Length: 593
Image (cartoon, rainbow, N blue to C red; front, side, top):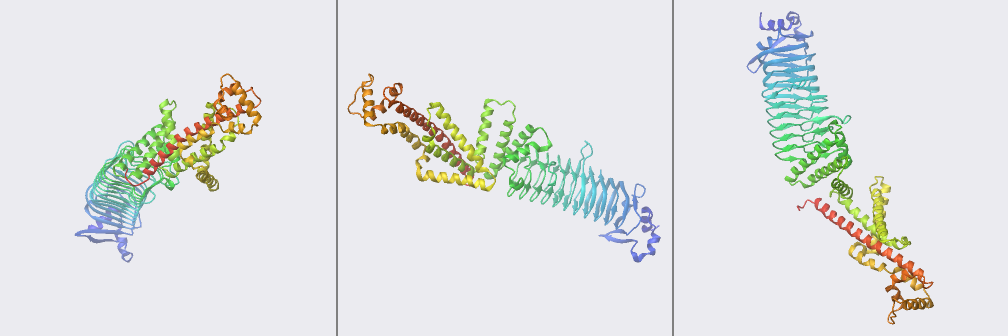
């Protein structure tokens, strides 16, 4: 029996029938791969079965199959296989177990299920242009090249149950243009040489607890789908010994990089994270490149609402307290790494997110101490006013709100306070006015509906312009404090000016006659009244004119006390705004501090 007949007999091919149709090329032909002779088997219409009884043929001959169908391909317990090539073939099931092979190629094949277990491919293992339902890798070693390109794979699994696999990929790995991988589990795998996984799409990926000993390239990949953002891409507990590139990749799902170690460069250039990932506590020993990264949808991942949603949904866990602590640690680690690289502008985003997490953490504490209440209130205040010294536009407008509120209150003060109030009441009134005015202006300013928002801004700008034109001294809190002396006798002077000469003489006579007041010819009646306001308040029924004077005296006292209280509050708020403004401006500049 010659070699062609031996191959045909082993594979169940009737060679005599095919030889009669030589013009259809239904034959077993020969060719050479380098210096090695190989056999081409093509256009076999019947499904070929490979099992323990005939798989020895692969150890004896180099075989290439074209346009063939296999019912079952079971290649097990074989050594010293040199070369196998499948081109445009169909497989119901491939089981390759405990073999050693130099080279194995699959090109443009359709495979329902592929299992590689306890096998070693010393030279090259190539999948190109495939449609594969399920790929399972267990304890395999790939020596030089593992090349998966232009594949459509539904699921890759490298572990079974709770027993971790120990795949060793010693060669260069090329995996390109993979589409629609439903699930990819390559956990506990050692990638001993360069790994290329470019421009591929994974609906779910888990490469945790693996070691990449050489360069890794995930450039242009898409992880997860926008339709289902509740899943997690698990890239945790990985060691990248050399460069790791994720340039221009899209992460639709939450990505877990926790406890992952990047020994060299970690590049996320122009990546798009629809959800901010967790790097807690990832270790970056080399350069971290996050230039032109988009954080969150529409680059709004660092907004408070999105961070709060992330805390609620991360890892699909209901333990939000654990999530918020882990994410705070992640943001803190990224902040420190970026500060080391003098990337202060990106570092402030992670610092801001870190403070958001601290605020959320304090808010969720059921029984807060006084210290925790104060910390939470300060974090809330800084977030609302300047977004933790990152939003220059916001703090500038807050300062304008304070100035306009104070200006309007000063202008309306004399008309509003017509009743007799105490000093404490005046302080409360001033406090309520400030808080109320800002509480009204602040939400109007932030309304997204453009007409209402611009109307609020217009009123704010008009009020600022009016103050600059008519009362510019308001901008200086010290002058505002001293000018409040003008309100000590405003109303009482108006009442005195309305009195007739006879009424003034009567008041003067009564004041002189009162035993506690001695006549002072050098002083006018007006001066006598102003100097003795306290005595007049106690004896307001001496003359018919005195009750009006007493009422005016009390109103002046309230106005004066209120103005003083307002000035104190205004000074404190304005100083805080100015401090926050300069700090925010300094943080938003590229000039080193």
